[in-house]
Amino acid sequence: MNSDILNFFYNNKIVIFIVFAAIVLVLCAIKYFFENIKKEKIQKAISKYLSNDVVENVVKNASNIAPGGKREDVSVLFADIRNFTKISESLDANITTTILNEYFSAMMPIIEEHNGVLNKFLGDAVLVIFGTSKKSNNHALDAINCASKMLRKIKHLQDKWLDEGKPKIDIGIGISSGDAFIGNIGSKDRLEYTVIGDTVNTASRIENYNKVYNTNFLIAPSTYQRVKPFVDVITINNVMIRGKASKMNIYEVVRLKK
Image (tube, rainbow, N blue to C red; front, side, top):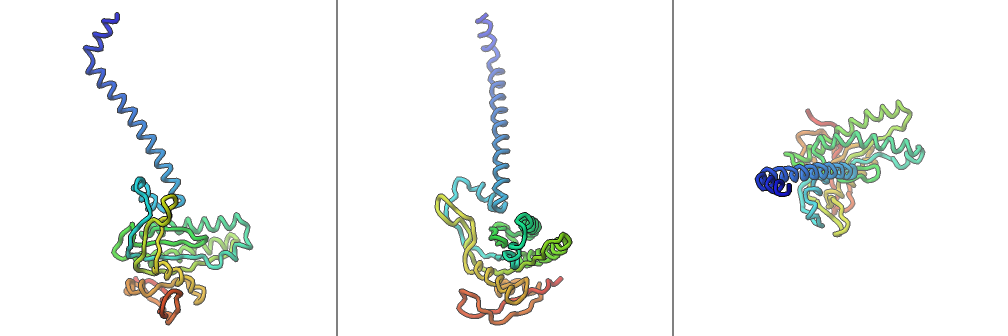
């Protein structure tokens, strides 16, 4: 009996090898399939905290993540909800959360549609970068179009919220264009993917002037020069921007030219 079994294996060793190899391949494929599912779930979970572009970059370079970055020509958009801290003090926490979630959920598709990368939430504000991982012919114009659509969207949300008995909230937007450092800041144990530099500071400080001039949409000269043929503006002369050596003009965008 034993000799018959040995003869069988000897005479059919090629067939047996093929069957064995096939089993190994199937098991490897199953393992690869479930590992990919796990990886996708993790990536999807992380993307709830970071933009898809940042997540994709982290996954792509997972074995080589370290502090560092590069300087790029970008446009930076700050959008801030007007007086939301004061408004939220009179609201139930659930209503506050509902309004913020609905607002951010409405803005995210607009940002992505116009090639923007959401860098971070800053309380009730957002910082968006244009011209980095998503290249375009005119990232300043992308930022302008994005801001215009965000402002139109907030008008729609205002009507909806008022119908629901919720407070009317408004937003202010500031945009600046120019050189900025983009990359990983921190230590080997804790990193943040961010953008820093004068372009970022200028966008933030210009956005704050919306409160001073009762406006919604202000841009820096660096942005205006890149989008001049596409916008109608009101010039606000000789504004002192903190961190700047001299006063500068800033521009309120009143409409986009068709």
